[in-house]
Image 1 (cartoon, rainbow, N blue to C red):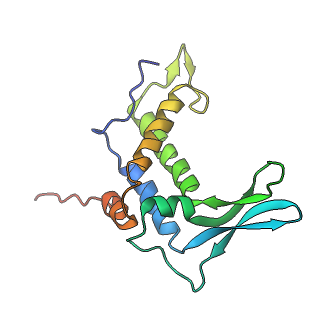
Image 2 (image 1 turned 135 degrees about the vertical axis):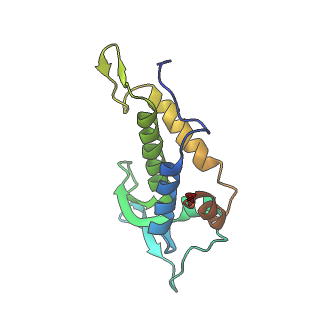
Image 3 (image 1 turned 135 degrees about the horizontal axis):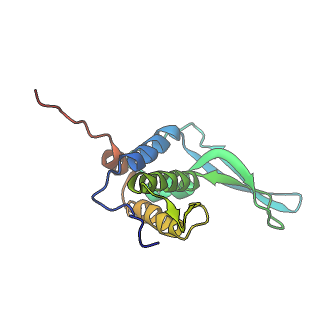
Length: 161
């Protein structure tokens, strides 16, 4: 595994920034999860805030990640638990991981080991990529949503001449 180059701070993170920016743009409405007990099951349903509200630039980023919901639900497969509301943090985490994985693939022309192409899903390097993705998001937890938007906005390159 030593022959692979992991993304570093000197690499192009624009794909990761784009994933974060697009996720913020996709979920502007304030939807939160509401716990309901029904027929012996406890479930969490997404619920729009009434009156309708948008996430503000002053919202703590961590609050947006953990309390914000996409409006979708998924089964828990846990006894006594029905469904849970999908959090924005779950979606963002997956998108950032995918973008970091894309960076890794771009940085490494040869993704073979012992003559076979590696499967990133099962290769040990996926743990490193997951840690990079989680750390990137965790490093912004203390920021506001507005500060994150500012950090990930596209950089305009001005060409001379």
